[in-house]
Amino acid sequence: MGALVEVRDVCKIYNPGENEVRALDHVDVTIQENEFVAIIGHSGSGKSTLMNMLGCLDVPTSGTYFLHGQDVSGMSDDELSDVRNREIGFIFQGFNLIPSLTAEENVELPLIYRRVGKRERKQLARQALEKVGLSHRMFHKPSEMSGGQQQRVAIARAIAQAPPIILADEPTGNLDSHSTREIMGILKKLHQDGHTVILITHDNDIAARAERVIRIRDGKIEEDVMRRGERNE
Amino acid sequence: MSQFWEYLKIALMNIKSNKGRSFLTMLGIIIGISSVILIISVGNGIKAEVNGELNQMAGGQVAVYTDNSRNEEPVYFTEEDFEAVMENVDHVLGVTPVYSIYATTATGKGTFDVLMTCGTEGMEYYSSDPIVRGRFYSAGDYDSGRRVCIIPESAARKLFGTTDVVGMTLELDVYGVSQEFEIIGIRRDSASSLINMGSGGMLTVEAPLTVLEGFGNYVSDFEQFYIIGEGNEYASRIAQESVSLMERRHNVRGGGTILVESFNDALAQVNSILGYITAFVVLVAAISLLVGGIGVMNIMLVSVAERTREIGIRKSLGARTSSILLQFLSEAAIITLLGGLIGIGLGALGAAAVCSAIGFSAQVKLSTVLGASLFSSAVGIFFGIYPAKRAAKMSPIDALRHE
Ligand SMILES: Nc1ncnc2c1ncn2[C@@H]1O[C@H](COP(=O)(O)OP(=O)(O)OP(=O)(O)O)[C@@H](O)[C@H]1O
Ligand SMILES: [Mg+2]
Image 1 (cartoon, rainbow over the protein chains, first blue to last red):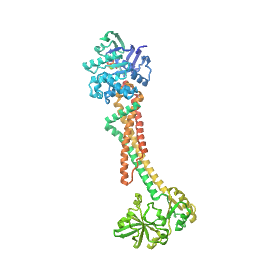
Image 2: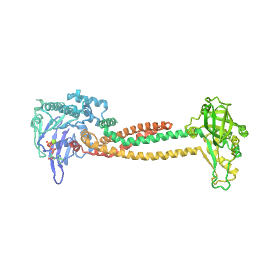
Image 3: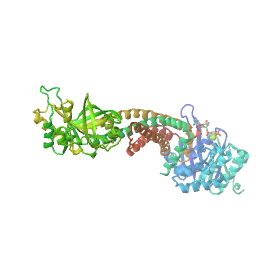
Image 4: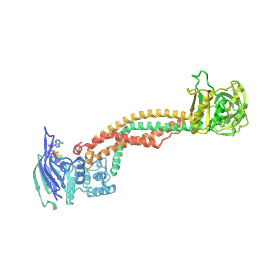
């Protein structure tokens, strides 16, 4: 079986023509199943652009992207929606919870779009919230929770339907050191449970917790280091 | 389908969290729908009432009259004509002219104005209210000009304080001439508000036309008379046959000299007037619904703009274009449906109020309610399409980046 993520010679060009920005410049990345990868780089280096590509939120200007052996680069909007729903759990820097919904309802969202029945949905949502230690906050709205708790709800939402890839863009960017440790602990646990975790960060300390670090600069991959043994620390 | 309930929940939640705004948005729909419901329910009430009234008052009645404006030799109907109709036309209960004259009477209870209604013995059937005591006057009474009369129960109570008055006499004064009448029958009061309205609340007395001679008021030529048929279903045939009979007897052919009006015609007329009123109100309501619909479109555009980030989140989690479209469409439809339901409630209440003021009962039909509900949701869907499409077309990254 091929790699989980296979990015071949991908470019992403914003504003083609005048004022053109090469956010990704001939990038090749391959990620196997159950890796824990950190993508690190300075601000504006193209991390979020790469993440959007990997998360099927955006399509490359050129090059190909195979996800689970499927060519994603030319897919329609609805096909991309289905792929995101099936393959990817997103964790965003700004949590991106829907403020009018409770924790449980937020976690149910991807399951709704997957047409999971109500009873099963509630059960999966509860399990996911239990995994992040928030079963006692199920019926609270995001505004009634701390930042760390909101991010844990977002993680529960990302893992509720057990997607193979967890994609986290600066998940700890808005959090204090205590919450950061908590979140990183959960991500590590998810990795141990068999998820592939891709973590985007500009923080070397956080990147150091991953077993593989991809350093990106000006839209190009500068360094790709594998550090074995980290896994069972 | 499970998604649909989610959208319903989301929509209701959004409406609840923006109560004031949602209500203002619904206002146009509420006004439009409530006015339609009001007018249709009142209209149905009036129609039912008038139908019932006319049937009760004049079921199967046909009026025959002459138009002498263009005749060199005017045509008048006589007793012989009435007899001819009785003999030659089938399913006829009675034939009578109706001649009304004002009178006064004084009893132990005071002095009263009375409307005297005179005709042949066929007038027994002119009113559908039954004789509850005594009898109606006979052909013999009519021919001999006996001074007998029939009064309704309420008149008996007013004049004598009791309805047990058969055999008593009533002194009727017409233009200074006074005559004594024997009361030979009591008619049940009419339940019909139209009939009661028609007599202006005055006491009514029925008497043979021939008694008028005694007042120095001899009537033998008539421009109009009534044929009371056995039922509504015979009305048009009776009308046809009577006209040709009269034309033959008076030797006039066509030319519109002898005319008929059955109460079916009157009914059709009332219905068509109601139809015009309804059409007008529906037009006004349509304009208000159009304005309301544009309001809904506007508020949905605002809602889409406010919830751009939510749309981005939903799309990133796997919502398809159609899911977002359906979410906003159902939200628009629910806003207008709620407005429609409120409008139906208000319209029905208004109709009940209006009708109870006139003394009718309003008729809110299920078909009207269903139609109004469907229509108001359709307005929401129609005017929600543009905003919902805008929401559905958003690219997930742009929407997520939106602040
Ligand atoms: N929609 C866009 N239109 C034009 N240029 C863009 C757009 N999005 C990103 N860019 C540019 O692409 C480059 C890479 O942006 P990207 O958001 O991927 O950086 P990043 O590594 O995530 O930075 P940060 O750490 O600040 O989030 C930047 O120069 C940015 O200005
Ligand atoms: Mg970024």
